[in-house]
Image 1 (tube, helix red, strand yellow):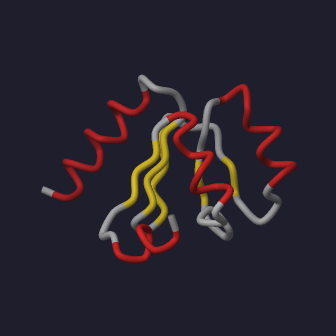
Image 2: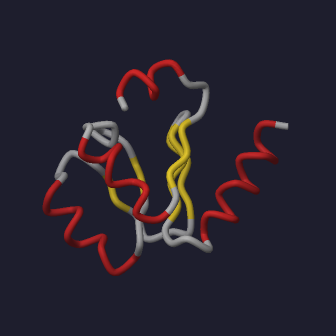
Length: 83
């Protein structure tokens, strides 16, 4: 996971697809989001991550979204930002 992140120009997670990157430590020092009902639990597990209650968040090349439907928003934002 870390190698993929390091070698990518953009890294996008949708809904609970963020669990792998979170457990790999990719969220350390980053501002990210996840499903709203789970934010408090994630804050307790990863105190060095800034968790925000938003539909999607970009922090450098890391893009995260809240729920599955927010994935449409993050991909749209990524496309508009990139192209």
